[in-house]
Length: 292
Image (cartoon, rainbow, N blue to C red; front, side, top):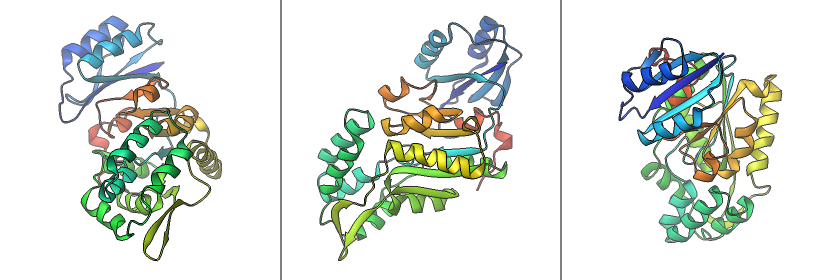
């Protein structure tokens, strides 16, 4: 058995019964279940539809996401999440660079690295080098003035934790930020790179080894093995090329508002919904959400 989930952005709530019923009829699905009116609904299927990507394309034109997945085991026991442009709405290094006056150059490198056009380690080293001499006090300033959480993140973490799941934040960014984000959202642990600081200023050199794509894969294996979990019991979420390793390993790998080249390599794509989409994909209704 399979389950098809349709998702709209909560701010738009533009998923209507006519659209839902038309797909159910076309695929001979079960009676649909509304998880949140206007935002999320699901129905059962006996087989994977041959035309699912054509239907997906048509729904994208309406700014609606759709995921078809096996019904068995969709509620996960672990969440492995990227931070920048996933759990928060910014790229921390871009914000630091903006304060340092080199924002345009760093943002260009970040975009190319996240799209898979540049080697992640080399791109990170180059970007951190442009921050040399920046006072460490700017980190707290960026956290206070520039960072915002992606909507739905608190509900995602609190609900999965209440159901016994383990939540880990694994970022190619920096511990100075993941520590704050993990604490605020309730993650069990966080891993990231370290910005080296001497005499109160950034040295322009990241600590080694650099945590990139392979380190995220390593974290996936280490944490799941420590917890005694199979790969199919894990949900991973990210947006960049350095997330693809863990997204492909996970039972459900969610490309969230991902770069086009990244989304094209993932079967589970959320382009319009927020982080609550990850709960709807597991079969949680809005009434089941836990708020931190």
